[in-house]
Amino acid sequence: MKNIVILISGRGSNMEAIIRAAAAEQWPARIAAVISHRADAAGLAIATHAGIPVAVVEHQHYPDRVSFDRALAEQIDVFQPDLVVLAGFMRILSAGFVEHYRGSLLNIHPSLLPSFPGLSTHRRAIDAGVHFHGATVHFVTQELDHGPIVAQAVVPVLRDDTEKTLAARVLTEEHRIYPAAVRGIIEGRIRLVDDRVRHDELFESRS
Image (cartoon, rainbow, N blue to C red; front, side, top):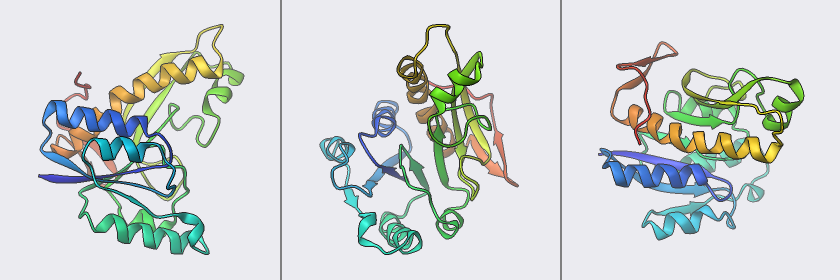
């Protein structure tokens, strides 16, 4: 039974999708903990209701990013994670933290990377006039919103799209591909080999 630790900043809708999939599909893993840097993160209550241990490491209690990340890693490691999943965790992580979890730190970004890293991806996609947008699951590296790509989902950008409508359509796809990617990694069907993602089978999400 492998351990998954999920990091959140807010409601954690991707966290919730992963929790539901893990239970419904009986993954050979458990959500060992949900951790936030904000005590008021709504997702903590959702995790508690699901019977998952929660913890808070508040970033404002630390003088700099490195000391916060060190404390965060100490809390994560209490749960002996096989995989650390960022689910809307809105903190830039230090190089030392990323290296500590090298090959076991996963993120989802609301764009088709390498396009539109960073914030405001939906507005930028609309402003750029692209015809397709989407979401990307990737292993985390020291370069922001880069790293070996595990899975992507594509949605069309419609003529009358707003940031809100486009974001909603992308989020639906995030909830589909993120649990499938996490499951594939936990089951060993998706592996990181020499900084490249290898799939033992064609990647397909499971409903």
